[in-house]
Length: 325
Ligand code: AHM
Ligand code: MG
Image (cartoon, rainbow, N blue to C red; front, side):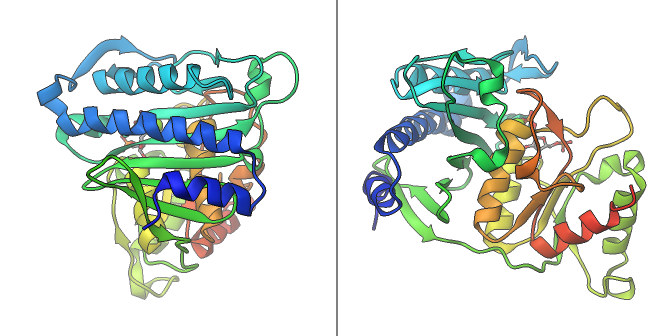
């Protein structure tokens, strides 16, 4: 059984990657273990409920959003290899160490609406190399393709870490000693699927190509797709993407017509990009229906994006429906 502590130096050496990157990953994953301890205890640690504050995106923060954010920030600020960080819960980036070579972007606790009802939540992170010179917002606005590592920790029935350093995807499970132990190597997502994930309550607000796509899936065996589809919606992206990594499927959060200024709900830099890198590394695909997610040039730290990701046949089918859009 390989622990993360053993895996990281081996993997870095095997692929000629810098030890400093491994060190940043150690800090992120250790912080996730601390978050896990709070999530596990819930009401017993007095961590459930609202914080009474809001974030820059106008969303009410839960106590655990704030706790998870503080844990990650404190840990990363103490790591000299971290040049700066950006978080869903912080208005702007936080400068860390001038000589730190890496930028860490994260959603400290994704799926907040599920915290108080004891349904899986997670932490999502993306790591970029820090460009030379003074740290500015632009330093972070790199295409997803530039990520040097990405991962998530799922606080579910088991606590699992899923990690990529762009040489495949590795899955670790937290043991009783608080160590991540490798439990799966290089999971692959089948190109075809019969399962989709979308918040159907938004259906009336979607654009015509997405309306058409979902109608085709719902038509099942008798429709143009010629097969029956199953639907799942946890409302925790980490749980959803993990299910897709394990058994295939397609996840979407389309743009809708309610607020034209918002091209979707999910955030490009610390939700869509890290998940897209993981899925691509596992043989899946990810797009905003027009362009590969990882090729989008970011324009803002908290930029939102339409999301279609998972089994490659479905993502290609969705892209195709949007061709004349
Ligand atoms: P959050 O970062 O505020 O938790 O929001 C992101 C979450 C995703 O985990 C999930 O896919 C989506 O929002 C759920 O949205 P909805 O509440 O519309 O079902
Ligand atoms: Mg989120």
